[in-house]
Amino acid sequence: MTTVTVIGAGNLGSVVAGIAAKGGTGVQVLARDAEKAQAVAGPLGGSAGVVGDAVTGEIVVLAVPYAAFEDLIAAYPGAFDGKVLVDVSNPVDFSTFDDLLVPADSSAAKVLQDAVPGAKVVKAFNANFGATLGTGAAGPVQTAVLVAGDDADAKRTLVDLVTSAGLRAVDAGSLKRARELEAIGFLQITLAGAEKISWAGGFALVD
Image (spheres, one colour):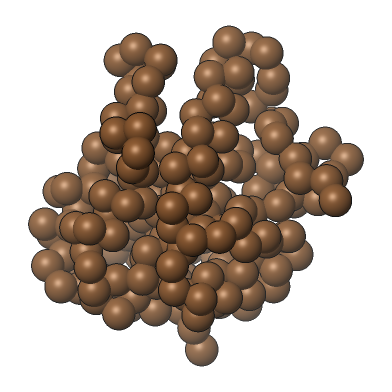
């Protein structure tokens, strides 16, 4: 059985762990705080641990801020090789709330792939608020998870995970498209921060 390791026990990490469990996938949750990891994993029938513990999942979701990537990669030298490594981050400069922390011609996902060349990096979940992932709906529309990556099998694995949980998944193209996905996520965050939209709403994809 495919298993998912979620590193991070915050809002989005908790929701993604729930999606994995709903789709019938075994879940491991790792966090800096063991109690927080257990609070997420326990109700899902999953296992919990702290960052630094062995990663058991074939799919590894980095549900941490972009700024934490460097330390996390250092904590797991070689451990992500061969894994489907899912980047859910939006590299927003929260000191200004007016820029991204990556060059305009790059993305957090590209930085991650360059840092862990042995992994199969996939960008997903960053263009969704946790509330719409949890409920499965963005307003009257089924929640759609946009998935970008260069490895077709890795994308298919994640798409299957998402659809098994009752959500819609859309292949958004190669990892180059992560730049546009992060721009969408950034805009959505700034609109919600300015109270132009609700944190329980956001963009929806309509055929």
